[in-house]
Amino acid sequence: MNNITLIGMPGAGKSTIGVVLAKVLGYQFLDSDLLIQKQEKRRLSEIIEEEGYKGFKDVENRVNASIEAENTVIATGGSVVYCEEAMEHLKSIGTVVYLKLSLNALSKRLGNLKGRGVLLREGQNLTDLYEERTPLYEKYADIVIDEEGKDLEASLEILLKTLKEN
Image 1 (spheres, rainbow, N blue to C red):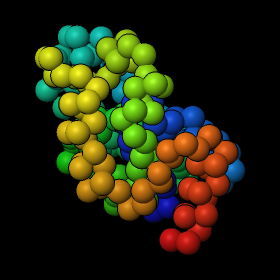
Image 2 (image 1 turned 180 degrees about the vertical axis):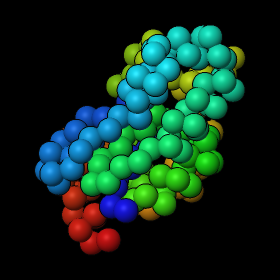
Image 3 (image 1 turned 90 degrees about the horizontal axis):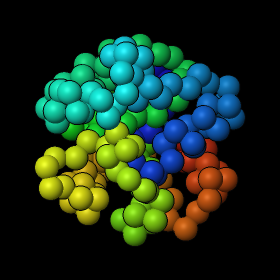
Image 4 (image 1 turned 30 degrees about the vertical axis):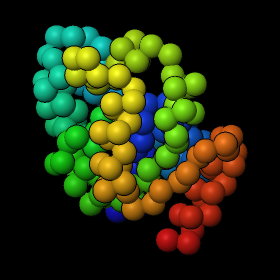
C-alpha cells in the first residue's frame, strides 16, 4: 500500500500540508478527524465531552484502524499515537510521517486547545501533552520532517524530497 499518513501535534500542519501534498502527488486526501465526526455524527469536542478521555480514544482507534485507502494522504488527529491498533494498521498501509515542531512554535500557533477538540486529561496542558506524545510520534514515524522555522512550501519541499529518497 502506498498511502502517506501524517502524524504530529495539533497545529503541526497535518491537514494543511496533507491537502497540498495530495494535490502534488495526485492522491486522495483523508482527514481522520473529519472521518470520526462523520461516522459518529458529532464534533470531536462533543465526543470527548460525552464519552470522556478513554471513550474518545476507543472511537479514534476503531475509526483509524478501519481506514481502507490507496494513493491517499491521511491526516490524523494528534492523539492517534495512543491507539496502538490504529497505528499498526496505518503503518501497514503506507508510510508514516511525523511533522515535528518545537513546543515554543506550537504554543504560538495554537489557541484554545479544548475548542480544537484536543484530547487532554484533567489538568493536562500543552507542555505535558508535548512531552507525553513526542516519544510516541518518534516511535511510529518512518520519516521525521522538522518544520522548525519553515513555511508550508519549505516543509512540503523537504517532505517530497524525503519521500522520493525512501
